[in-house]
Length: 66
Image: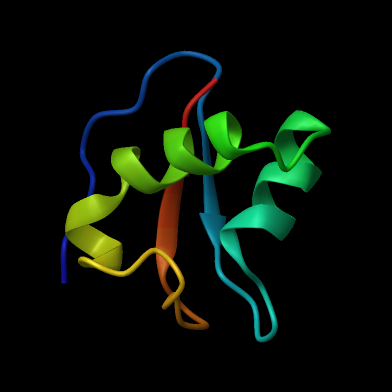
């Protein structure tokens, strides 16, 4: 398990819920699920998510950059 110890001002931490996707999370935090916002979340959490951005699991904690 990877635990983030650094958080930038304005950033958030989100715990993935059943049925979530990076698109849904991007829509909730940025107001848009466009590919840029989805990629921003994915690349900030690539070690946690792994190589497939379509496979996130309930309980994962994701860093949401501002």
